[in-house]
Structures are given as structure tokens and as C-alpha cells.
Image 1 (cartoon, rainbow, N blue to C red):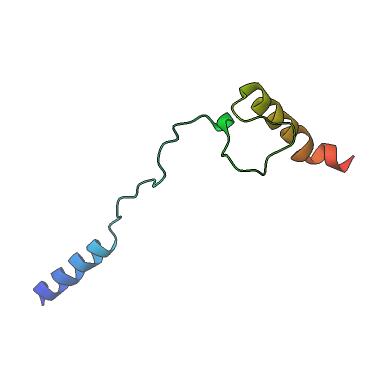
Image 2: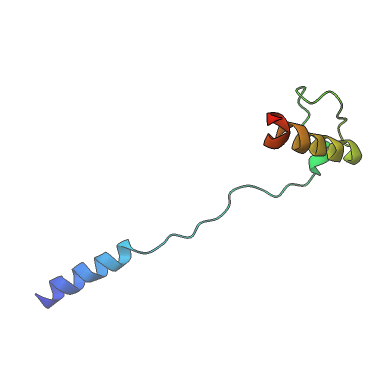
Length: 72
């Protein structure tokens, strides 16, 4: 009887173990401002131009994603 209870307890502990998890995305070797090479981009943005990239992010944050400016 003790052996059966020991086996059940061991099986219960094994079921509670956590498997190791890893992030499956590879490291990015190019700058985000380099672009993706796809044709669908914003009209004022030039690929591989960091200043243009930052300008577009600032405009998007101010006008496209700012709910306060959109509601007024």
C-alpha cells in the first residue's frame, strides 16, 4: 500500500514540473530603420534613413495613436 501511495505521489510531482521555455525568435542583425523591403510604406519615409525613421515614429505617436488629439 505504501509503495502505491509513493508511486502516486511521485507521479503527481512529475506532473507539476515545468518544462524549459525559450524565445524562438532570432536576433535582429539590421537596424529597424533599414526597412523590410516591402512596397507598402508611408509616403514620407525613406529606407535606411534613421532621421526619417524617427520623424515618422514621432508623427505616428502624435497624430495616429494619440487619442487626445483625435477626439478634439
